[in-house]
Image 1 (cartoon, helix red, strand yellow):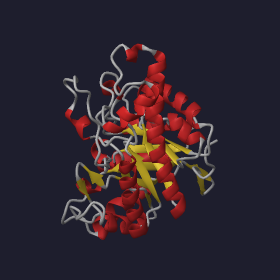
Image 2 (cartoon, rainbow, N blue to C red):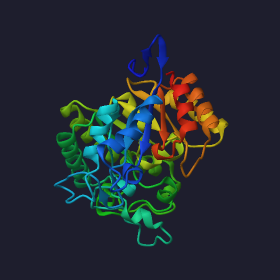
Image 3 (cartoon, rainbow, N blue to C red):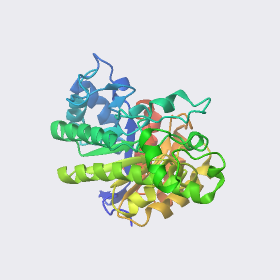
Image 4 (tube, rainbow, N blue to C red):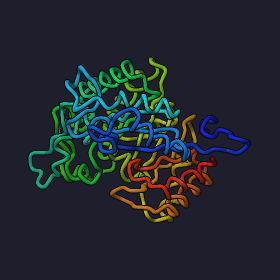
Length: 345
């Protein structure tokens, strides 16, 4: 079941854990990024009950921390950010990824030769089939832990590209093609192959094994340093997560992550409620904290304070250990007051 540490007691009342994703490089631009300036904003979040921050620290080719692996940073923002967080009593899990805009790997997804209209973002997606990509991300995570001493590492984009792309155009990089030779007898499945349940099963199994190997590597690193491993995961487990190799239910059951954050971003309360029931079932077999992701201001949803509070209350009633809000920079005074109310402070 879920971790007993998710709820604490303050003055006799139960306090729900509240986390937040954020983009410090945008929230604290150069010249407005001193420890004091960062601490002032984080103090407002902390007073509302937010005790865990997942900062994006490497995005679209830029990084905001010292790294020998990645080279010179755009600026070192992680140092003052962590110092400010410590001053206000907030835990920090810097976000690192495998693919997407966070990808630290150098070997990327390749479309089949006959593919047409593949989205541009996919062509820069670090493929999970390459152990070299895993190693590079782990080396960067190790640098962050040793140099900055955060309380954990947060995984995002720990998966293959989006399911709707893979359904038509499975990755045709050298490693994926080599792996298929062993179970399919050819490097690329043809359209008629992808209509066969057995082929689809083996393709998804292959992707899942590659992504799991990455998560296991990160788990080994965080265990070595005695810090937590948290992860943002796709909310539609059967439709998206499994198709992209992100079998996060198994990660929870096997103790590969400490905190699981399904990104349940939707304006539909009915859809949110449906996801909560499913996520309770999927996270309930392991000792993992389940924080229901709420899209306060995301591409999928924009919620006012009342809508956000309604989803947060329902998540808690459905068995979630807490919530994770996207994103920190957009939370206004009214929304923070609602966060404080639902957190139990």
